[in-house]
Image (cartoon, rainbow, N blue to C red):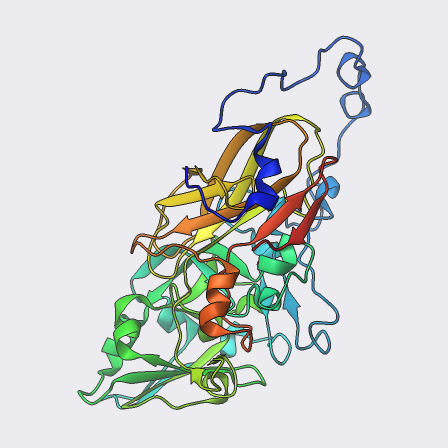
Length: 420
């Protein structure tokens, strides 16, 4: 437990909260007597059910129809330059279903015929080559679970609490298993010349998205992926092939990948000069800030997932991740940072992947200020928003990994707030 000074106006929250995962004093379920939902035969047990979905592709239960990617209309000019946010509040575990994966496109979704797909490798190589999709699939395949996060994720929260829902504050992230081939194997086929130090990756969409990537990263763990969670990439996620750059900002994960050029210096393209740089208070800009810093957020309770069961045993659930490795520890506070408690991480702990954490406590209905704080495997600890602002100011919407606060009132309603 960590105690901080200067928080007296929030200490009223500490009373009445029994934390630490103990069993609730009240039962977790109601008595069976008198409940018609269990005592009476329900319609679904009294009639023939539906057949297998005639579309040939299984869909979620119609009762889950509300679990959708959603956008913020005023955040982008139109649906062509869109951002669709993952419904983090409605998910559990660490794998994001393909149908609700966050996606961002700059010129609409490219519809690439896999029969006509080509990937060109040229520049400072011994043998300029062009690969078909079938050519790529002949290389040794690898399966890796990685998160992809837009560097602007949580960007609207840099100045103050803005968007009332974890889907919108933190939903520009997803985590899937990618199947593909190592980029170093493709480059080995072409033969990188000694003076080659950088790689330019270009997409086939009308925006011609391009980013410079240092060759050290390329030869370490970058992939060209053609499947996600076992099936072909979705069109909006780069079908038929995309770049995977583990732990680094999502804008570098070029979709509809068509060209790889080896060079001796970075290209300074639009997406790494006028965009995706971090404006500092003195007017300078940080560039090539590729790694995504350790981050976490409580997904439930949250504004889109209020506490509905009333008082008693309550489960907090959330996600944590880092572009520098794993997450060995997550702390949770119920009182806005006065007292911190170690959360329970459950499920696999993988480099550059989402981690699922839980914290159970007995809620007596008093107000809460919920926060989570991630520690990554390098020793880095997720900072507060105020600590970030003290260094970076509020001129950039990129790389905001500050601690998020949810305020819970006595009715279980949850709001996006800030504490200081």
